[in-house]
Length: 440
Image: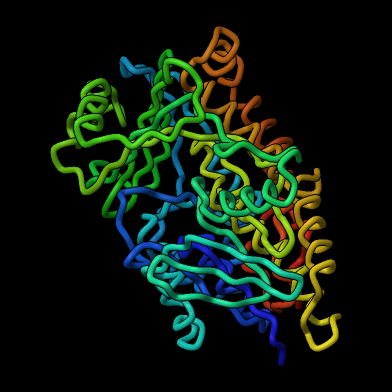
């Protein structure tokens, strides 16, 4: 696509790299600015990928490599903090039956490495590190992005893929209020956290493919097992909901880990058994919510920069991928339809508003996924008597879980979109068809 149009992507994490792949395949020029010194950084976290996202990763040409290192979840147990197994679920096998593959756990750093190395050399050289953004300037004709090292990047638009504490979102807010100080806009910190979560990874103490939840009042654990390493998420309810950003210390991590020492991960393994061999761990508040304003002028947000899900159900990364797909499908169409392949500011504003409208509509799963993820967290932490009753008794019968998968989970997964400009053979075939077919 011969065009002067250029996208400046801020953030080189999994969603920024998703944008790099999608823009490259669309023939749209781009640069990715990552503030960290390395694209691949091992923080001890995992990501869960669902079959509708595998369809997009297939279009990127990296699906086989990813599936060779991922751990498909195939066994689900619910356990009390005292070790009593009160449910053996079938959600993972039902998802595989319906959609051709099950939810799969990946080590975050390994997934990012495969995504980065899967880029062609011409695209990989556009992914830059040590580029901490400090300013964004916009005009009727383009954008200027300035980094702390003094470098300046000029382009046609900015795509903020820089996470929950997005610098892009912060600078966009400043521009909006500078233009009109009295206008209604999202607060500086738009998300609320009711829980904190200690996440970590360690050598696998069990068979792979396990996805277990451990439940008690105001605390919960999620355990995922892989072939070589496994992961846990230890959740604790905060004294009160907060928007404050917290920087926890190693001492905070050790203290919280001791509170969970006797919690089971499996019927035979406890947190204290794996803690001495931890390969990495981190502690953060578990923000959730959705931003009201996703764009301004030539700036648009994707991923955690504009919506945040709790980590229960593992749908956050998948929704970020859907953001990029919906946005790039419309953006490519606008570039092709514009004179010289360079859509003007009003056209971009229309594309951005249409993208936001679609993602917030029932045509996509985002709003439902936010609600279901938050509900899952509160059910597992027995947030009140209603959640306790629901989690411990009402959803225990297998026919109830089958109804949940068949009428709640699968209908939302089916809505997953793919890049409409990349042809390919459908890689995910199950009992249910996809609402958005792969282009042949």
